[in-house]
Length: 121
Image 1 (spheres, helix red, strand yellow):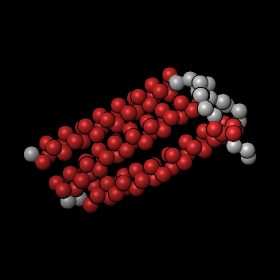
Image 2 (cartoon, helix red, strand yellow):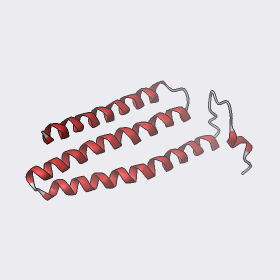
Image 3 (cartoon, helix red, strand yellow):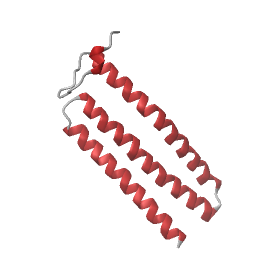
C-alpha cells in the first residue's frame, strides 16, 4: 500500500513539473517582451524544477527504504541542496536580467506603471 502511494505521489509530482515546464516554454514563445518572457521562464524553472526535484526525493527515499543503499540517500540530499540553491539564485538572477534589460533601454511593451523611471540613479 505504501509503495502505491509513493508511486502515485511520484507520478503526480512529475506531471506537475512537466506541466509547469511546458507552460513556461509556451510563455517564452508567446509573450511579447523580455519581462513577460522572463516571468514565464522564472516560474517554469522554479515550480517545474522544484516539483521534479520533489519527485526525485520521493524516489530516492523509497529506494533507500527498500534497498538500504546509502547511494540513494546521498542523491536525495544532493537534490535538496539543488532545490534550495535554485530557490535563492533563480529570483536573484531574474532580477539582474530584468534590471540589465531595463538599463539597456528595453522598455516593457504594455506597461501601465513604470516605477523605475521615477527613481533617480
